[in-house]
Image (cartoon, rainbow, N blue to C red; front, side, top):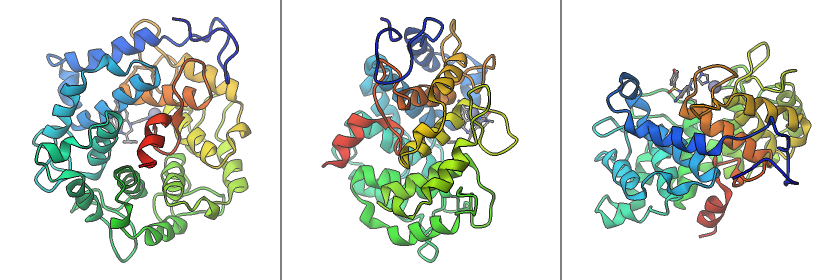
Length: 334
Ligand code: 3PZ
Ligand code: ZN
């Protein structure tokens, strides 16, 4: 199958700009069959996130069936704890980040109903775990009952609750005012009020505002200017001034630009070419930058970045949810 020829809806056309779809499918499938390798167990704390990253990548490259649906659902449910939240793997403590991944996986597989069918207290039980992590004074969220607050958790909470149709369990206006307090004069956002702007935090803050329906609060020209300055001569994007380019920042920056309608403020062809150079053409997968070791995290964000740029043959990605647009559109219309 060729994904690179002919007129597309966006970039991606020349022969040295190939996307190695079959290699990426094989790479992602192989991640689950390496149980005899040390690396597999060293990443146990990422297992549920890893399933979300791999599954989303497969859906975007039009190979949704490459992981067994029933097996994935069984694994996700085996990570659920009595408090309704999900841990990274069976027996691990529940945490916001894994719970968000669990919801994204179940929505992608159209399997949220399993929470009810299998006597897990339904989606309401999951949502109440998430809602219980909001600080009702400030509007922000913790990752678990002990942890620190972080705008990543605020974004994750709104993301998961909106997919479950239960956003009204939390104080959205309070969350919005907390996000606004993280805004900086350069147009970007930091991890908490007063902290320097960082592209990852920009995505979480702008994503949260998008879900809350409050993108009107963003200074789009100023933020668009700061984000477009993240592109380097090699086409890649960094997360803040003076840092190296990295494929995952392609996603944080480009998705943020897409949400504020300014994706055309960067050189899209150069970015697509940079992302493609981060592939491992033999083993499959993407690395943070050309020549480095691949991992599933940079693989999903590389593919999602290409999708955002309109690369031919990919499913369209939703910049707010990092999931296939057709799935989020259907879910949110319910
Ligand atoms: C990576 N995490 O803290 S992590 C992550 N990073 O769990 C997963 N770009 O050692 C993988 N850097 C690889 N597979 C890296 C997720 C980080 C991000 C580190 C990274 C990425 C450059 C240094 C934080 C959502 C969730 C979590 C994060 C960001 C967004 C690591 C180091 C950290 C982590 C995992 C492995 C390679 C994979
Ligand atoms: Zn990275």
